[in-house]
Image (cartoon, rainbow, N blue to C red; front, side, top):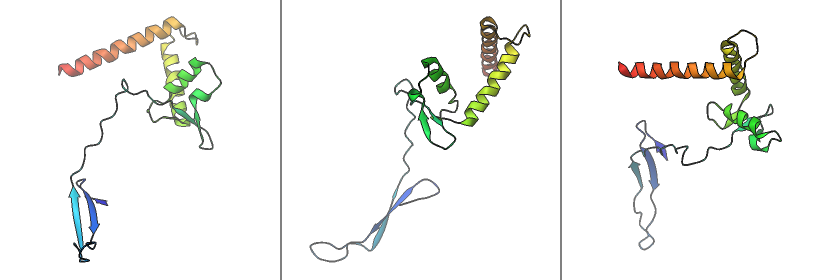
Length: 141
């Protein structure tokens, strides 16, 4: 079984002898089949997303749902799988921590070093409005 540069798969069929006559049916034949389209990704609305697993230092995987922690913490850990790979790595956690630290510093409106719920809500609403305007402006061109 092989594949050409255009995605056609080749299947090599070796010759065999006819059971009735004992004669060779063919020496060899190659059948080329057109490429098949990859299956469409399943909509997250139709299939539940698999629970991400934490990659431990030794490479073993730990299912987030198996942790003996409050559900809110499990939900937070699941969100750290930002690349939707199904795995939460040190890189995912580190990147998310940096983003959170930057958001915390940027959203702290009064500079107190303490982010209030109101400051966080105001900042997220502002970012949402900016991103929506950006989308609208890019479609106007």
